[in-house]
Amino acid sequence: QEVFLQVWSLAGQYDATKASPIGWLMMLTHRRAVDRVRAEQSATRRDIVFGHAHLGRDHDVVAEEVTQRLDEQSVLDCLQTMTELQRQAVALAYYGGRTYLEVSETLAVPLPTVKSRIKDGLKRLENCLTGGNTR
Image (cartoon, rainbow, N blue to C red):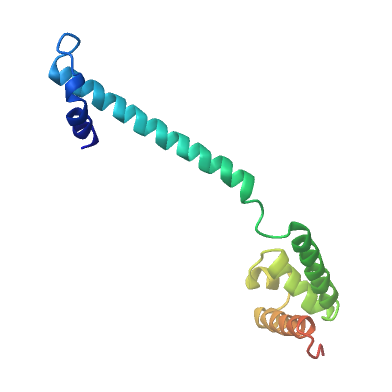
């Protein structure tokens, strides 16, 4: 559509000695297509450059790191409120990635006991982390 408008407005400049009408039309179409591709590429590059220059971080990395370390220390402190058996079962299941059955086999205790230890240990951990009663 843009090419036909261009042909209409430039019709007086058409020179039959340089190109046939279809050749002239194809040349204008090719130029318009190349211009469009270049404009899109240029716009994309501008967007990327602008994004890198102006968008930066949307969060405070240092504060995030400090918060993460404080949270980790709180969990470690609260793990100390568990009994040794609870701590072992929770550590194997959540830090070791083992199933309840695997924890049961590793600790050589019945599966229901492992489930109880983990449940009680997690409840104790929750209470400690939320400021509730740890016993």
